[in-house]
Each structure stands twice: as C-alpha cells, then as structure tokens.
Image (cartoon, rainbow, N blue to C red; front, side, top):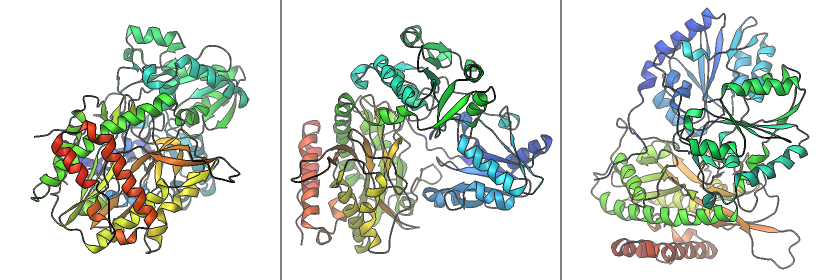
Length: 611
C-alpha cells in the first residue's frame, strides 16, 4: 500500500565483520609504526550526518549512531557513546572487541591517559578532529609519556577496500523567496563581524554556514540538503568558495561567480597556507574546523583566532520570510501527520501493523503533499521496548509488530523548501496501563512548562531545561538527552548554537526555532516522547517588567494523544494550554483535510474535562 523512498530498512551487518576489520587496522598501524588510532564519527566538516564514504566508525565497529568515537590499541579497544545510544550499542557492537564507555562521563582522552604506555605512538587523522579534540589527545599522550602522531593521507584508504565514492550531489540555488535575503546582502553583513573579531579572513568549515551565506543547497549527505564545501571570506576582497566543479551547472556557476571566486577543493589547503605566509590573522570555527586547517595556517607563520563562526548565530535567527515559511511547512506537515494518525488508529487495532509499515505510511502521506524534498532524518519508530531506544532505527531484522497493549513512539520530520519539521508523538495501541498514563502525563506537564515559559532576554537553554524535568524528578525519574535542539530553515534538523539542555549556554533569541521534546524511557518496556517545534518570540507586555520578555510560540500542529493523559494530574493552566493548542490544531488544519480525517481530528482535539 505504501512505500518509503527517502529511507532504507536494510540491515547493516557491519558488526559481524568487525573482527577482520579491526585486525586489518592493527596490521596497518604496525606497518606505520603506530600502536593505536582514534576513529571518530566525523567527516572533514564535523557533520552530524556524513556521506557513506566517511562512515569509518560504522564500518569498523558496526555502530550506526550519529555520535561516537573508537580508540583501537594493539591489545584493547573501546567505543565511546553518549546516553542516547547505550541500548543501541549493545545490539550493534561485538563486546568482545570493544568495551563500551560513556562519551561524557569517561571521554576518550581520560581513557587514553589510563591505557596508553610510555612509548606508545597514537595516530589520528587531523582532518577528522577539531583543534580542541587534538589538544585533548595530545594532553592525554603527554600525561602517559606517549606520542601523538598526525596521519595523512587517510589511513582507511589502505584497509577499506570497497569504500563508497565521495558524493557529487548537484548544487542548487536557494531562491530568495525561501531564503528571505540575497546572498550578496548576507556577505555584506558578515564582513563587519570579521572586523569585530580582529581577523583578516574567516574560514567557513561548516557546510551549513556555506549553504546559508551563499544561498545554495545540495545533496551530499543524507536527509540534509547540504553541499559539502569550504569557503573563505576576507575582511576585504572577494570571497572564495571551494567546491567540486562537477556539482555545478553553468547557470549555478555563473551565479556563484558573481559573488565569489569558485575554486576546486585542492586549492583550499594552498590558499590557507598562503594566508599563513602573508602573516594574516585567520578566524576559524572552534566547533567544526579541523586541526589540519589550523596547522596549514600556523605552519606558515599565520595567526589563528578561535571561537564561534559568527554565521552560526546569524543563521539561527530566522528572518520574517523564513518564519512565514516555517509556518506554512508546519501546516502542510501537520495535515500529513494527522492523516497518518487517523490511519494508524484504524490500522494498528488488529495487531498486525509493523514498525516499517508505519514508517512507510507516514512518508507516503508527506509525499502526497507534493512538496516533500526528503525526510529530515531517518524516522524513529519504536514499538514497545524499541521505543525505549532513544535513536532506534528499524531494520528488516528488528522490525517489530505493534502489539495491542503497547506504546508506539514515532519521531519523524520532513524537508520542504520553505521549512524543516520534526515531531514526535507517542501512541497507545489498546488500553494503556496506569503507569504509562502517569509517565506520559509527567512528560506532558514538562512539555507544557517549556511551551508556556516566559523569560527575559539573555536566558539560556540550560536555564529552561529543568522546567521539562521537574515533574519526572518528583517521581525519581529523568531522561538522558537534551530537552531541545535548534532547527534550520531547509537545512539541518539539528542546528546550533542554541539548545534547551543542561549544556545550553547560548542565549535564546527571537527568531530561533527549537524543539521541545522531553521524554521518559523504561528499558525493555516502552518509550515516551512529546515533541513540537517552537519559535522564540516577544512575550506579551507585563506591567512593571524591568527587562524585555520572550516566550515560545508552538509551530507544530498535531494532536497529543488524549488517551494517555491523566487529567487529574494537570493543573487548570495546563488543561487550558492543551485545550487551546488542540483548538488551534483543528482550526489550522481543517481546510487541508478530507471529511473523514477532519471528523477524526475533531474528536482527537476535543476539550479535556478533568474527572
């Protein structure tokens, strides 16, 4: 009935192949006079989603999560993942080859200090590590009496014999009707920021920033319309854009050459070295710039200034056109999600529906809009215990029936030219237990607390994060991920610099779009998450207020399942918020729905009356 075109459910059998691959790596290390090597999940841009050719960590270990690092020594190896992947890593990785460590609690550099010997030579690829990462490795080696060795060219070229070819996705111009600002105007706004940083040039290592600054999009990485490219913007003179010319049509090249010198990627290293030879001060992004970039500049006598790329914050604050586009995208997406929810309630009742079938149906409903460019990430569709795996990815092998009496967690999103979406709903199949209703309502109370928050200018995500956790904390419960992440405009579904989490130190500014997604996960039983996207806006005026106030406007439009809510646990204010939200969902989506689906939605969004 349905099919998925933008995501695959094929099993990734890399874990079973890890033993000979680890052996091949150790053989190559011995050949090069090394006793260990660090393998991050990274490409040259520190992207979250990377091309198949850069999936070194998955190829070596079998782990397919979006964040992790392996350290392979001659007699032991460890894989470091964060709390999102503690269950997933057990399923994918051979524990006899890799010990599992918590990426935050026991980071690689601490493990290395305890496990390196005084004469060891630890290798790393300087194109895959930031400067700070390389410095931590160097410090760990120094503490152990070991030596850190930069390895170029890519060591994996020698052992990954069937490696995929690098991507050559066509680059497209992102129309100002969606971008809201011409690229030439953006570049003019960036130059004064370079001056404020007392730099002669800005190196753009993050392709998201390249895409935003030059109003281009591509298809080099899965699910994010990114062109893999670097750029250099001097404080004075023409910018340079480094991109494989095979990605450019004549028309696109002509448009870009009106803005910048378009050069082939090998020119990038040469030009950085020339900046160093000219003793220029170069600004690099501490979050994404590879250690190799810094070495190219400083080896020739240039000076570095390290810190956030100013484009990151400029990109995060959406303009009026992008905000209007986000609203349109969420109405369109909301109608597709509601069609799915109405279908799911019927299809799941018999107990024969599977996780994959649900994913295929949701993608099909989105494709029916005629506007879908891609999903914004592989859909997380977890039935029962699979829902407790925060970043679960269903495969043909793991595909589970959605059984009566279980919860089904579905976290999905879409890429439209006018906006990027991300939504999670938790759905009961049959009657939920009292415990499920209690846990869901605690998560909902936290979600509402974030949605209703009023906060002064300068407030950070870390200051809001506990709002979402307080009701879980009261019961001795919590969730091991952030409450929210930034979201791009037809770019990455996970965008910096702001986030709502314990680590979110960047102030929330009007125009930023973030997620609001508290959850609860009971291992081997079920998972709960409620996610909407929200826009930071000016709050209504408050008498006597001494500071400008902000609040969050919910963008996502889809009902929150009332069958899982325990009304007596909600305050009058929380009930009022929920009923108003549901009324807006019904009002906004009604013109986009067929009569049967609209009838379902009117029932799903009816006011809740506390018992």
